[in-house]
Image (cartoon, rainbow, N blue to C red; front, side):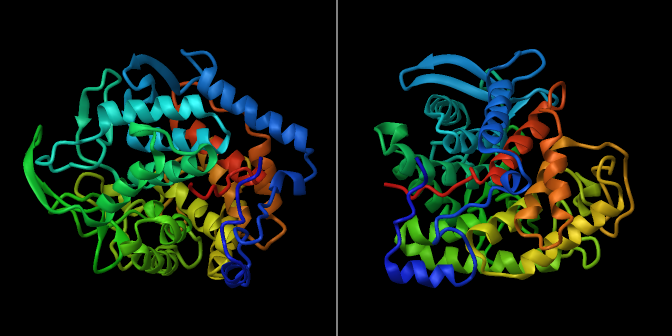
Length: 414
């Protein structure tokens, strides 16, 4: 079953198809198919990656771990085996992967664990309405405050679940859960409360003046963002489906993020920093002095602008960004480039990572140069990540397969 694209009226469809985006037309590019790989082989590659990462050898392959059951049903978590914690980022990615692959059992089990252990329902907690970004596998929080990319992916995955499967009851009323979360992302009031690190004051996840996602909602750390948290493709959908009072805001936020990408990306290399100020200049934080460089968070930024171009086609400059980025990585050697750089392209290590290979392949959704097929083929030829670093590399690898196969799709909620 393909995603439901008859959601628009005729006028809406025409207004959005003029930009070149695929949502209105109901077509998603299969970059693997364009490179000559048959549909059965593409489907088999994706299913093999899912089965290994979700149901393979627990000691060397999987990131998905069943964890018993409660009154709401089975529980499961996505484990960062390298860092030995459970992260809202990985949980929300796991849910997005599951809904795109029609794996409802895994989706519900991950969501149940997140709502049971990560979610803050107490109204007086500074993280109220949000999810702890890092926890131990027994449900004990490592850091109770949220990382906004997790909330963004949780909300989007829930809307898609409402479209693909319909709404259930309680925590499985997906659309109601998404609406509530999206309202808090936008409007959560300032709350001061006690945490393990002392008293903390925190508020909403979006900065209202700049209309940008914050790196953290904690007061004192509100003056910067993370380029890889900017998801204009999602904001466009929230402008259509989210609570009505905020739809204009989300439309504006999408346009703001597209402009932000242009300021944050280096004019020659296309590399973005891990953290940036709202004006796009790199931000070196006290706790992460290398955050002004292209590091692990920044791998994902190209996926975000390329998905936006693929779905909406509203900003041709995103194509220029992909071309710029791929030109840089091609110059470093497609089979052995490192995974960390200064923004002007000086290498910081020699590690070649499957997760970055996947993100650079997704950049081909927006790229115009013929070399983009080489990045797609590099992902096709990359083995499924395993071992100690399989969490981040593996999730980005599987997201990359979905994007490059045309199987990362829009599911309008019921």
